[in-house]
Image (cartoon, rainbow, N blue to C red; front, top):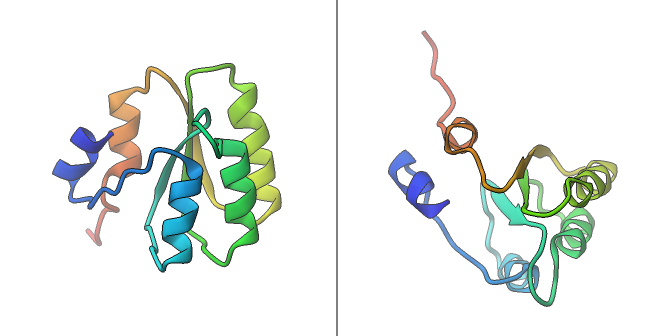
Amino acid sequence: MTRVACPLGWEVTEFTDGGALLSAIRRELRPDLILLDMVMPDVDGIETVRALGSSSLRCPVVLITGRLPIYTTAARELGLANGLEIVDALQKPVSLARLREILAPPAGPA
């Protein structure tokens, strides 16, 4: 993810689990986009989506899983019900073309 995002101009901060991300957000981290793996140690993707939905942070979220799509389906429904913008749900292995589409800067006026 980092190897795709950095050349596109993104500043990347990585976290080992949702708890670390949520702690950083409580300490004033304001991400422009969150790429969220659903299966993580300690605080998983579902718990992270639930906490993000309860927070004042509103930024787009991309859900990612290597497991059954039910993980991202449940997280998408929970996120949308709590006002989160769920951009996409990606299945591992993630398509690099789709990831580049998501991370590409918006096109300016023609």
